[in-house]
Image (cartoon, rainbow, N blue to C red; front, side, top):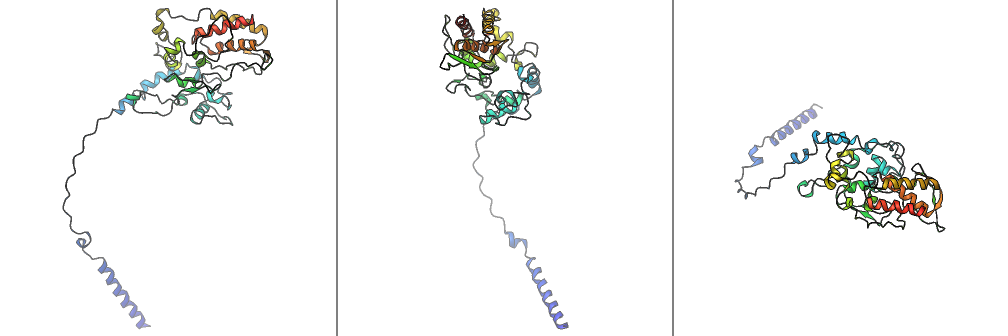
Length: 343
């Protein structure tokens, strides 16, 4: 037994010498001497100086730029969010009545079919997201709007509106939700909802001069797209001018300033479309007598196509809310010919 222990000790001692030998090689034997230095490469050409990113960004991303926008926005109908509580939760309404619905529609082409449990009002991030380009010098400021492209109408996919600027974003919502009356084959038309009509948003189509019920009468209709406000201005030019001393006009209040009118019309800028207010009152009285409209709202029932068309035209001009200013000649023709057909 003692011999075995002695032999084991001899083996262990011999092995330790081997480990010592493996770790005592000199550094020179592992790394080797340094090689000769290589030749210098050819000098590259200097790059072109870029735009000062800080100045191009802070022109918008600064408190001095944002504060007037936020203050004026409080005076807008968008900020009020009056319909978000009930319309913003519905899939069919959320596209324009809630922040979540609008974003989904812009990004996917549809809203959530199940609606929205906690919809929020239209805000900055509803219309603005990420820049489509950062080459502002050549491409202009896109203000990170979600929609710049032409807008296909909800009621007629064969019609596309293109204002060529930021106004396309407005037309995404400011368009009718329904088409006008259609003869049921017997000369009649059924109004099946107290919300019937173009539904609050016909501004873009009135401006374009389309989708009114063009009843034949003594007044002729101007060709689509020929209104002066359509050819010589835009939504943003009229509704987003510089503030004139208060937050309740211009900028993001979307309320036109006096300068927005006088810059084109001079000091004689009309405050309304001459005669249209009186004609609207006349048409309203006729429609009330028929029973198809009561206090500015449609009444369910079955009516002649002519009666329904006259009601449609009345609601279109009423809900446009510009008192015909968007397209005076088209508005006057629609209302005057509607009065004639009812008389």
